[in-house]
Image (tube, rainbow, N blue to C red; front, side):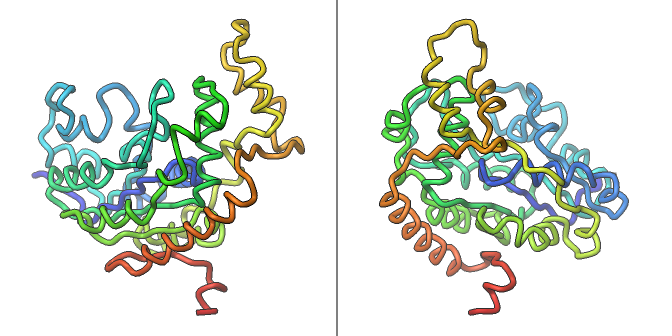
Length: 301
């Protein structure tokens, strides 16, 4: 008999919002969670060739048909658990387009993909999403582009990836209007540490299970420093260095006291902060959407 989970929780990212930290925390507790009836799978499961969620559930036209039917695939992922927890930010789209292409709207296919996955699973999916102040998000995305070998001046990057492309309210609204998507939980990247217990309880389903998932002890995936970005751009044509951004990240790390990279003016940050606040207000007003806030901030309302 095929046994499918009663609950599915999907942490969809977004990129550059402490996703790797959250995934490492869950991965370290995976065996303890499984003993509690909670099965977790992260990127390491879904980034092998032909193993993406889209491919596993037959949602890619350019991939061969999956070996298992959707119900059997879902049961194989759940392994008899009552709750299935997934985390894979690449499912909703890339952080940056290959070859530095223009991105006018972030994650524009996210709702369509999640709706198709829910239909294939024939089960409602609870969605978990972190958002980030747009200027901060694009600073980090630009550094990731450099690390990945897409070397260009920040002005070129921002022309191709404008602030207006980061519209979290549009993303959450499109998710909310999609059939098959259940409750949506959203939090600010800036509040991640403060709301970590709330995030984890929502993902794994109970406070008891959440206590089994302490936060990973280290900060991971630090962004490039201003000096690191300058060095990458300076050495962009040096063919003797395979991954100059990776070298710069280690030698000129913010952990060593170098200032973080910032491609925006104070005025741009202020405008972005106002836009972000307005987007969060829209998100918090949507039905069946929970916007997590730190306990002290919540008490002040």
